[in-house]
Length: 132
Image 1 (cartoon, rainbow, N blue to C red):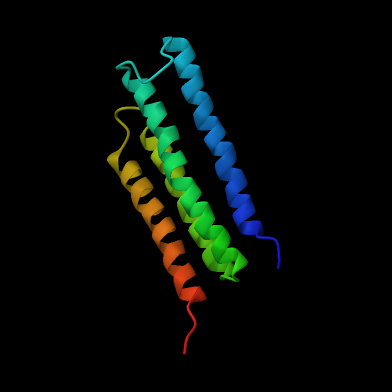
Image 2: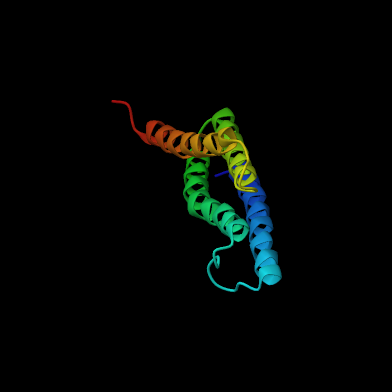
């Protein structure tokens, strides 16, 4: 079995991004003196949701991507799904960076995340299903 390098690079990038988003929440908590919840502070709420939304979606995507890679999935498909998911997560984080960011950025973030997860899952099932 070969090392799942594409999944490893995707996981490393997403891990660093996750820490960056976590730090923005921590810094905001420190400056607002809100240690739990959002305290009605909209800017803090957006930071919490940027971080939380990545936390909710990244694990499933990375599991599916890793399984697709170790079962011999197409390198182009792996790179494509990883790129779509990562760009979608960046777009979503940008969309939640301020109250008045373009709705298209959030829409792309949601759709790209959906395409990344559903596409990877569907490709994995198609790839591992024996043809008789």
